[in-house]
Length: 136
Image 1 (cartoon, one colour):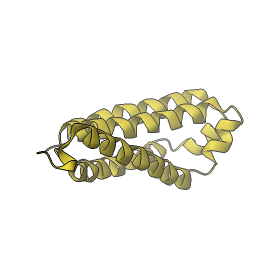
Image 2: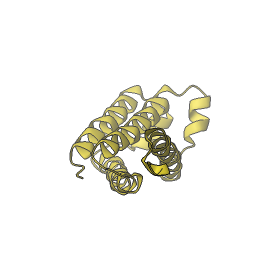
Image 3: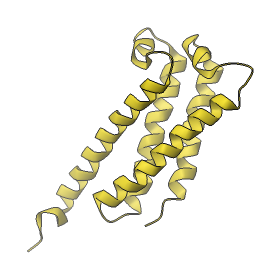
Image 4: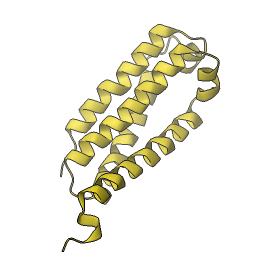
């Protein structure tokens, strides 16, 4: 007889719950490091902030996708995803550092869609690189 945690449905729900909670916690961290309120800007219709935030959500979920695919337990997947999330956050700070002529946060708050698109692509692209490096 299978143990409770070996049942595929339970494992799927476990991975899902951990990923959703981690996405929410990660978005809260990103909210803390930006100079504006993401959700207030999105409520106002700021497409640039929406694209940047959507890219972060996609990036975080993509890291979890790789982590789940390459690990046997929820705990292992959570550990690798945690590292991946730190690297994704580092990419955000590197983006800000590599644009000395303007502040990314200020441009996003002003609804500069070019910056929003680049921010979204950076999060998504970086998540593929991070995910590809996740090991068992």
